[in-house]
Image 1 (cartoon, one colour):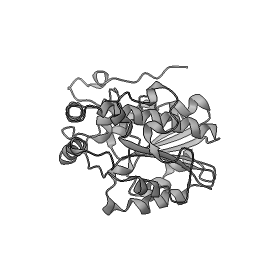
Image 2 (cartoon, helix red, strand yellow):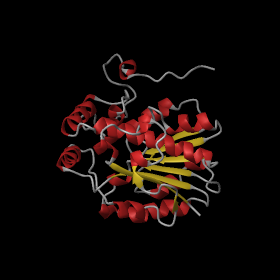
Image 3 (cartoon, helix red, strand yellow):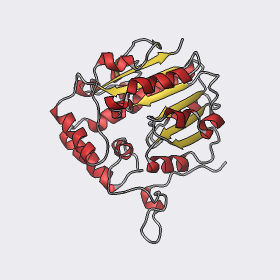
Image 4 (cartoon, one colour):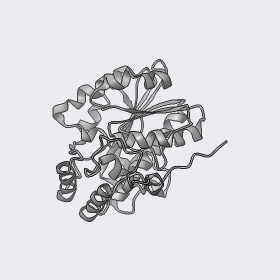
Length: 285
């Protein structure tokens, strides 16, 4: 079997100097939250403008890179927990660029038959995702906005990959805090929860309002002004409400480093980093 080699940015530059995988509609002068996150994780699927933003974030909030890695560590634990519960299909909304220990690699390592649909609105994240998962017919990538649930739940790609009559692992990691209150995240989450059958799981990680400081606000405000979106910080009760009538599994909604850590890579030496975000998993009765 031929091994899929992930191209680095230098490998996809055409003779004209253009990166030929970039959709024509993308403004590469504007940073993207998905690509900044990829950069902070040590990925190669980002542009100079994203690296500049990531570096600024680290200067103003030195634990930014560690925070991204702890969120990715929670993703791994969440996926492994769900596969241990018998889940064999995953919907990752706001997936960003599916690289650096992504959902399908973790899930299919546990159970090769697992199916995964990645969803993101960033066309570059989607273009990269399609490239990364090429040749894996159990994985798909969809360009859609989580604020339009029907475009996801009624999509041909979801219907091809996932069976909504069987348990689904829905992942919304570092995602809902990008949805402002005026976009009614409560109704959005309710629509997704209603679409899932009994025995499904919902995993959420969300920036913690009780930990926000001036440095964190400065970083997210700068990204917002640059076109990267604004973060809405919420308290524990607000984040917990997104689970609706789902039953939170132990240890409930906690700071993300506290959700069943399995090793040193799941916890930072800096206590401040461990408190940046909430995380939890709920099960639909």
